[in-house]
Image (cartoon, rainbow, N blue to C red; front, side, top):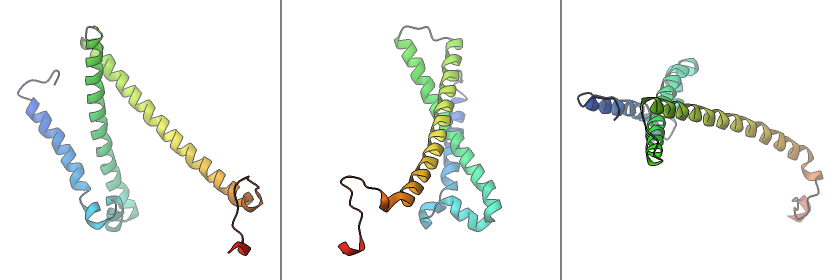
Amino acid sequence: MYAVSTRTRPLVVVLGNLFWAFNGILALGGPVSGTPSSVLTRAVFGIRGNRVSTVITNWSVCVAYEAVNLAMGALAGFALLDRLGVAVGTATRWAVVLLDGVDGAAITAYALFVTDFIDVLSQVLELTVVALGPGLAWPGLAWPSASST
């Protein structure tokens, strides 16, 4: 652990584990009932009240995963630079962490864009197939007809 004294290291480890334990406690009801926890809290708090619960839950999970990703990415970057013979000083460490954060944000934004684009594209294709379906003549594709049964 870089820049953390020996006395504060156990505190950092305990706080990190408590954060993950908090996420686990929030998700306890889901597997027991066979329903996602956000659906259960909707029944308890209503639709508007569930927004608050879901925001807290999702925010904590996002922060926890981002912390893990930044830590692992930074440590991998430090090790790679050290292996390449680059002196890993404070400025280099900050640059690696910043690059790791920007890279993670770019990948997340790209994934969200692609997901939205694929949703729209699949709806357009679905409507096209429904509208043109039986009239389409695709070689090798036989549409079922009432007389074939």
